Image 1 (cartoon, rainbow, N blue to C red):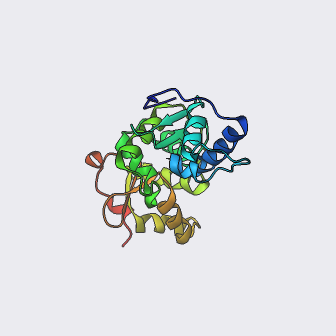
Image 2: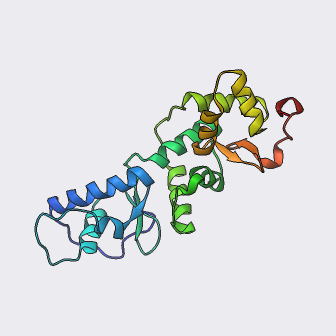
Image 3: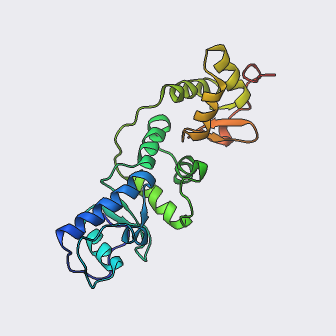
Length: 216
């Protein structure tokens, strides 16, 4: 599966090298969703000496995979669409809660806490489009995520953080736990100082936090 097709057809590599490249590539993709050829080339294990550069071997092995998706024209950044990943699970949560969302919204949800690192914007855009275009396994929400989703839906998709903390205190949910979930989950995005919105909720359509929902 390729967003950018190879310019030439490269000969195959041995099964041992292909397996080593696959192991390294899967390790990075599982964690980050995508990675680079250079990263994989510097990480896979060679069991015998070869004259071919590691980058060439890695590219040959990756080009032989049906699920490789090159994310930009130089074919340095790539993902593996058949490999489950942390961003993929996060995207599944977003779709479960918000349904279809704009690519920019999905990128904002997945990019919390600098999850995409130093990846070029064009690579991030291509990866987000890849996630949005392919079926994703259903992802269950954590109990605290589900609770916050319910509260925010009742509040119209928007609430002050301190109001959510007050609701939590009244229901036995510690502020520390709620703060961690709001910071880490892709389902909750900042909407101004001290204000949280539910992913997929349009700022243009959201009312101001209801007076009864604001803690004083």
